[in-house]
Image (cartoon, helix red, strand yellow):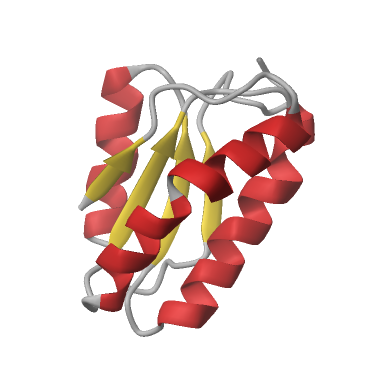
Amino acid sequence: MALRIERLPETALEAAEAFREHHLHSARKYLAEGKDLAIVVPPASFDHADWRRAMAHDLARAHAPARVNIVAGDDEASIAAALAFLEQAPGVTGQYLPLHGAGRFDG
């Protein structure tokens, strides 16, 4: 299952708060059912990586053995490829995967 979040505030602090306030409950509810979850978020500057990484780690620990990963990007082909990879990689959980141009230093 993929939880797609179309928009978040530009600043890291406001984005983290918006995620917690508007999307965290949905993610936890789904994970509580024991199902794997990929959270797809829009690209952001590198300063968002810390809260996104912490969210992926903490959700994965809290809901194991269900897997949770966060994928950041806006290119649908890249997102689809990342989601397909995660579907076939049962050992990957608790990861933040910024795709090209999605908050990494390459974009």
